[in-house]
Amino acid sequence: MSGSVARRASHRGVGGSRRSLRLHGKGWLEKSQVFAGQGLMPDVKFIGDDRLIEFMRRVPGDRRFTNSQNDEGRLWVDLEDADPAAVLNGLRGARPYYSLKSALMPAIELVARYGQAQDDPLAEVGDAHVVLIGVRGCECRALSYLDAIMLDEPMPEPFYESRRKNCTIVSVDCAVPAESCFCNLLGEPAYAEANFDLNLSPCEGGFLVEAGSETGEAILADASSLLSDATGEQQDARDDMQRQAAETLDGQNAQYGLPEDFAESMPATLEEAFWRAELAECVQCGGCTAVCPTCYCFLLYDQEAGEGAYERVRVWDSCQFTGYSEMAGPPGTMKPDPRRGHMSKFQHRFAHKFWYSGVYPGILGCVGCGRCRDTCPGAIDLRRVLSEMQSERVKNE
Ligand code: SF4
Ligand code: SF4
Image (cartoon, rainbow, N blue to C red; front, side, top):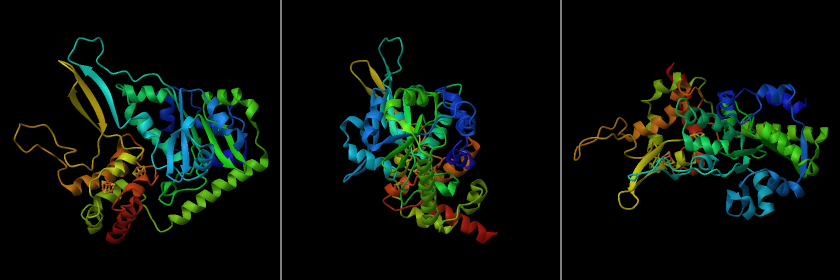
């Protein structure tokens, strides 16, 4: 067992990860198998930069998407359309702006047809197998959350379930955290611990590669001619890279202090002035929930699709939008809306992620990726709001 593996095991586990392993039956390796060397411990391999694109193409799938970093920013792109140099930059750089959420839950999709005789009104999801390359540790942890919600028995959501099964995940360690990242404040490392098939760790001249599932092991075996065994020096260098990323995160987030117990802290501060100050900067654009890898709210609407035929369409919704929680009522009357006020919506985003999610599904609803900070036109920063919450709580004690 390498030093890195032992160090990975020493980090706090991700709530619900074992549950997600069971839920979708993809053959993910249990953490105990990955990290304690119980028979399925994969070797650590090395792939050179010059062979990485070919290696990615060997991962079985119909389409492959990966991170790219060029003058236009950090994006997800189709591997076949990507500039290889931009792909290498993307995998070595900070996490992309968008998460993997839209690959599993598109922003808009047809879910049913009705009004004409048909055997099954449910729309087809298709069976295209997608490979996502460059998924970050925070997104892998977000999968535990989405799985717990979307695959919950007795009625798992069939579209998400199908995409999740038809998806191979290649994660990559964050060598360079973004300025808005704060996974460390939630006790998590800047790399994946579960929910990946293969993991890449940037190193000098290439990447270290490890399997996280039986699928990943099979891919490594199939591509063995492209790979070599990672040396001890390369693994030590990987450990150093991960340590540096952790130090960067500790440094950039040193000014923030999050509550130990959100469920205890939050209710006591809901009337405090700092909420009003933050609210003043919010224009209810919904950008924060759109980019968030754990936000899953959606809206269903029906539209005509020819004579006597209708379609049911699902689109992403946002708890920040006016009318989000409005309920049905008689025409011409004011509809009941338990969260009509802006403050109620604004606080709900925090309360859901850090308070109610602890009750169901029992996992924090935030992975500290900082995407909401990057997108917010009001520069509203979760770290700042949560730190204010903690300060107020301490002040009031
Ligand atoms: S991104 Fe910022 S301004 Fe837009 S809804 Fe979210 S908190 Fe409000
Ligand atoms: S709330 Fe913000 S920081 Fe937390 S997971 Fe969502 S986008 Fe990332």
